[in-house]
Structure formats: structure tokens, C-alpha cells
Amino acid sequence: MTVLTNPETVCPFGARRYNAWNEHVKARYGGRVQKVSVIAGFSCPNRDGLVGTGGCTFCNNDGFTPGYLDRRQTIAEQIDAGLDFLHRRYPGTQRYIAYFQSYSNTYGEFERLRACYEEALSHPGISGLAIGTRPDCLPNEVLDYLAQLAGTYIIELEIGVESCNDAALARVNRGHDFAASVDAIRRSAARALEVTVHLLLGLPGESNESMLDGARQLSALPIHALKIHQLQLVRGTALARQWQRDPASVPLLDEPACISLLADFIERLSPTILLQRVGSEVPPSLKLAPHWNLRLSELAPRISAELARRGSWQGCRYPPTGPDSVVAGGCGSLIQTLTSY
Ligand code: SF4
Image 1 (cartoon, rainbow, N blue to C red):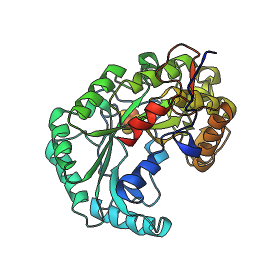
Image 2 (cartoon, rainbow, N blue to C red):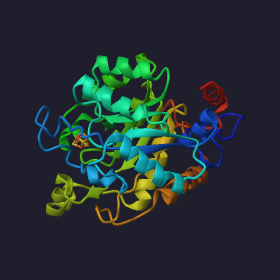
Image 3 (cartoon, rainbow, N blue to C red):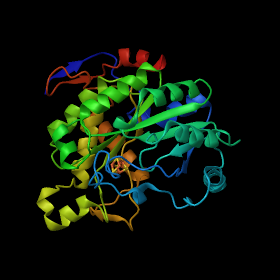
Image 4 (cartoon, rainbow, N blue to C red):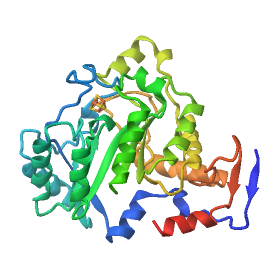
């Protein structure tokens, strides 16, 4: 390993050792900003036949739908119920934004999208929107409208990239390639929209090298934040059934390998990209495999501890100067970048 020394050997991110979303939000908005999930009833072009019918093989939207949601309610009623739940759970929260999370929330007639977003924004407890979608569901008309809203409200656009590797995307029937993600991210950023990318580490067809190369590829894009998920098999999905038939066709990361991979990835990721998530949880009743279980509140500190053990941090291998090089303490310039964020 080549170690590039620099006299400023201090990690710029404190004990977490990565550019944590929560710290950024507290500094920017003066306190916590909590997402209130809503279901607007949108579909997905990878399910309704426009792109495909089976959906992504890892997908079961029940895996990330909060229990307080009742899809028979209006958006305003869902927000009322969500705020009631979240006020009790996070009493110090400063602001709430409506989270259009399940399925593809920019997939629909423009007027319908606008009506849903505006119903949420007209709720007195709501300061903005987080909108989850696929990269191939972002026409310029929708981006222009979201950019207009971003002049008044908090607008976070969450794009499911999932992988930077076209072979892995094809293996899970994603229905778009990485070029579609690059295009959507660039068109969004050109309108000053803040993009959060979702990435799923450990898909079949990936190798450690291809996933780490993903850190390089994402770092070259105008991304505001990243949500990393580790592959977990959710009951009822095509991928879970494939694993049950032939476990070797869906290799799963064990706990040490997952933590090591996450640390390797974070070291190679641009230090300006905020990490909104470094892993995910699937409700135990829905999770089939892997069998190790770490709550997110346990996983994140384990990753920080691994980075501390290595004496490394987010971006210390970025930009890569060679396959094994690491900058020891080379973050003076990174600190400048972060403070002007
Ligand atoms: S993960 Fe998203 S894009 Fe894929 S099938 Fe599910 S809702 Fe559709």
C-alpha cells in the first residue's frame, strides 16, 4: 500500500469519520428535519408494463412502508397521522417534510403529481418534500416544477441508482442502465436540485471491485447525498425465491465482510457527498437473509469504529491515485470544501 503523508493528519468528520447528513441538517436548519411518509398511490413502470412487469427482483415495498401509514387516507390525513406518531417519537424535531417513498413518485400525469405534492405542501406542519423515484421517470417538465418549488420549500429528490454496474442492474431486472442515472442526476443538478442517490451494495453480478468503482463513478457526479443499503432478501421477492432455489446464485455478505466493504467504499467516496444512510434495516418479519442482524443504530457506529481502526475516513482514498494508495491526513483541502458547502 502506498501511503501519501500530509502533516494535517486530522479526520475532518470527528468521531463518525464520514460526512454525516444529520450534522449537516442540524447546521443548515437549526435542528432535526424529519420525514413523514405518505403513499400517493403511484405505480412503477417496471411493474405496470411500460418498462417491465416483474419489477426489480429485490423489491417489496412493504419492506420500507411505516406501520402508521393507511393508504386509504388522503395525503393530508396521512400527514396528520404521521405527525401525531412522530411528535411523540421525536419530540425535539424542528421541521417535517412529506416523504413520497413507495414506488416511483414522479411517474404519472404532471397535473396529478402537482396535485399530490401541493396537497402535502399545503399542510401547515410540512416544510418540504422528499420524493423517491427511478432515473427514467424524471422528465424535464417535472424537474423544472420541482426546481421552482425548491425556491420556497425544502425539496430533496431521491433517485434509485442502485448500482453503477449495468450487468448487475440487468441481473435484478432493474429496467434501466447506469447511463440513465447519470443523465437524470445531471439534469436535476443543472436545475440546482439537491439529489440523494440510493445505492444497493451486494447485488448479484457485483464484485468488490465493481462496487468500489461505483464510489469513483458516483463521486464524479453532482450528488448532494447518498443512501447506502446493503442487500437483504425480503420475503416474497423474486430474489428471495432465487436464493432459496440456488443460494450460490445470490451470494450474501456476512457481517465482517459488509462492514469492511462499507469502510472501503466510504474511503473512496468524495468527502463532499453527505451520507444520509450507511445501511438499512428490514423488519424482521419480512427479512429472509442474511441471518446476521444489526440495527442501523448499531451498524453506523461499527463502520465508524472500523474507519477509526484503520486511521481512515470518507474520501481519504479519493481521488484514487492508485489502486492501493491512501492519503494519511490529507484533508486540509477537504475541510475548505466542506465549510463552503
Ligand atoms: S424498486 Fe422501485 S423501480 Fe424497482 S420495482 Fe420496486 S418500485 Fe419499481
